[in-house]
Image (tube, rainbow, N blue to C red; front, side):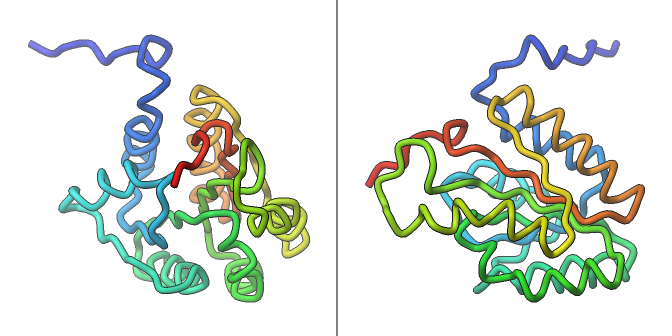
Length: 180
């Protein structure tokens, strides 16, 4: 006997990382690269526990661009997780996926917005979307759990089925105020 699949609308909005994991697994993501980030911590734990997914801890974000290109050339789909402050570290390397027309899906948690305590996060927060667009990426943004799940599902289809480079910006309000 099969249990019916729960309806997305009835699931807890606090469990959006599990929903993103489900969406990315359904999109056949087999590699996940990241620089450790509290905003992505639950999603990182879910992927790290999955024996069917290769996880790559990065020392710098641009390494993830090369890993994503290599994964695609090797027949696998990947996702790159980072914080908005890391976008500035990989702008030059983004030319690899843009010029090579490799699919790229980036999930970027935003800092420097909602209730930010660290002034050093604010300038890159302002520059994140314009910088990504200037190098040729399509930028999508989500501010609610429901929008985020739907946006990532759409972004994954666009990246993997149409060989596009997509960054999904996850609003800081969704992540919550960072506490030290």
